[in-house]
Structure formats: C-alpha cells, structure tokens
Amino acid sequence: MSGEGMTGTGAGGTSVVVERRVAASPGRVWEAITDLPGLPRVLTGVRKVEVLTPGGFAVGTRWRETRRMLGREATEEMTVTACEPPDRYVTVADSHGVHHVSELTLTPTGPGPPRAEPEPRQVGPEPAPAEPGPPSSA
Image (cartoon, rainbow, N blue to C red):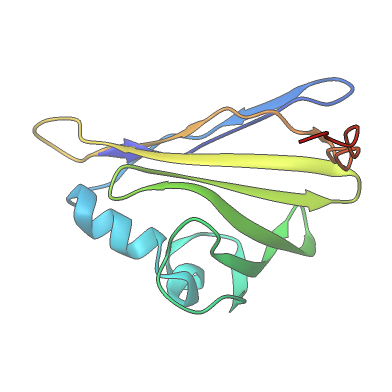
C-alpha cells in the first residue's frame, strides 16, 4: 500500500511529495493514521497531538500537532476538509502567512505492501476573507 502527499503554491510555488510502502492492509493503515492521539507513535517527527473536536475522524475534525522539523519544534492547527475512508483525506493549516494543504492517499499495490502517496498541494499566502456581496433583492 502507498500514500501521502502535499502541494502548495505561493510566491515561489512549493510542492512536496512523499511516498511510503507499508506492509499492512489499507484498513489497518487508515486506522493508524486517523488515530490522532496515536500519531506520535506512527509518524516520525510528531511529538504531541491535542484533539480539538469531539467524535470520530471526519470532515471538520481539528487538532493541534506539534512536530520537530529541521531542528525546530512547531505547532500547527490542522482541519480535515475531505475524508474518504479508507482511501484518502485532506487537511489544511494556516501558519505564519502560509496556507498548507496536505492530501494523504492510500493505494493498494497488489501483492506486497500497499503504497501511501501524498498528493502535491499548493501552499501559499493565507486565503483572503470573502468579501460581502451586493445585497440581494428577493
């Protein structure tokens, strides 16, 4: 099985793609990557997770994730914007003026370990707030 991906566009446009082969069924991998309190045991670099919404993993689920990257620790608030169990989910985060979109896709690869592929997503400035439209005359 394979899966996991991110893309972003900003001033220079940044894209990151990561692929991992995992010797487990898509269902088992899905359980591991959506068990938010257990992420520090599963994902390298994740130090701590604070779940902010009640209920199961679904669109709207939010959490704070503290990671160590490039020798520094950073905490980001993640929100699930798409969820298609047990195949794919998308999260967004806005931090320091950058809008991050991450997509994790689980793809069975036939005999042998499944492959996890992140889909590239665009990362750029935080989206501008929507401007109010003209008054409607109904």
